[in-house]
Length: 137
Image 1 (cartoon, helix red, strand yellow):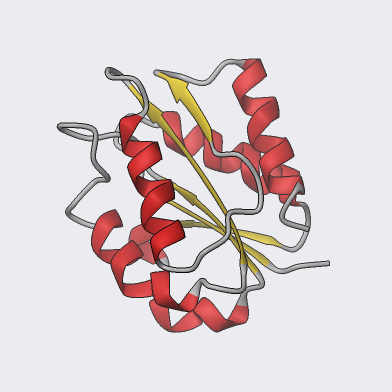
Image 2: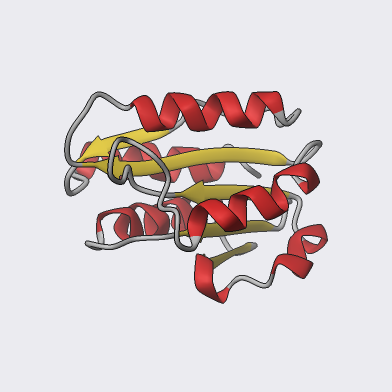
């Protein structure tokens, strides 16, 4: 069974709720981290990563903490199981498509389809998050 890190950033709590569901789906070998609490030197300790960030501004990753974290670790994620999730309040999910492309460009193969939801996740979205987490085992 894989050791999974669920690393997220959340302003309103929507992406945090999704992260908790992802960790639940990933099971006992999952560790949940707010991005500010994850030590980048620990990347090699994990077989899988679920990364969560909401859309910000003009449909981009949050640029104060999450985007710098992702840029710092993305080269170490190739060869690991990786999945993406996040919430948005406007737009059509372009931030997620751009993030998926950034992963692809860095040689990261996503383990499953990304999960996005508009505003607070409902039970359907939370179940999708649990399935995303389970796919990383």
